[in-house]
Image (cartoon, rainbow, N blue to C red):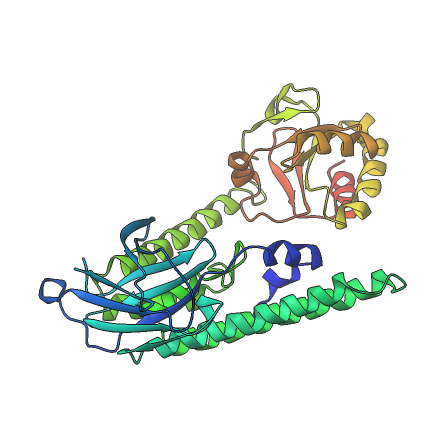
Length: 401
């Protein structure tokens, strides 16, 4: 299992995730799917058991593009309400919302009578369903997410309420380690349960489930899992709009990957470096091909990568040594905060040409989004060194002399 996603998380990131409500899921699909034209109306009876909830409960239909209100019903004196509707396809996804942060997602097939019993608060974690065997799959997914979210709360609360005399650095490191491990375990458990049930729409919902604002599973790191679910749904539910949408997203992902490969090949040794014009520190537009230097170093960097702290002084030394011999450095940054970028360049005393790229330009000159990167170009902008270190830059220049 590739845990690259989790290696990027620190305690502060986990804290940001924790304060957003989760949307938890369950599935209703014990009946055999039938063509939508033969479907009867669906009846969902909601019983709030001992909960004292008044007012309206809302039913939303989820399409691959958005979520829209389908119906609303008021809770009666018996703490019950009912939804009746005609589905637009044999398998579909709906959301029953009780409050801004209390919702349950339903994946309905051709079953016509469902009873949903909410036992206690929180609503999205304490329920049972009568009339659906497959709801157990999403109940398990709910349980997994709830268990790990409770762990997150426990670890973070302990960190936040630590005695003042505690060593904060050590405590933060320990807490961060616990949070990372908890997130990895959540990731692995969800992957395991989805991979065992790839033909269920519940698994599709599970793929897109979130903890905070972040998806728990990521198509780039879990491509085989996404592909497994997509292939299974395409075989079992070929005309389902959600299955089609997942297939389209997989196709687009593959196409983008293939495009990235082609773009990366254009950056191989022997090719002419892409003709890009970038904004400089003083807000001038600089076209790299217009520069007449004998050698041009293209240095791709980001200020928050610690690797650059080692490269910068070495590259600066090479620049000072060979500038008089026709060497120029184009340091291209991919920062979102232009002011922070300008301040960093001045602080580090970057006396070469400093440029900043927007996302479109970044997709051309750094399609794989890899940092750091150093290219060496000749006077005609032909690439003579790709992904080399500073020492190799110097050797290539010496070899050409």
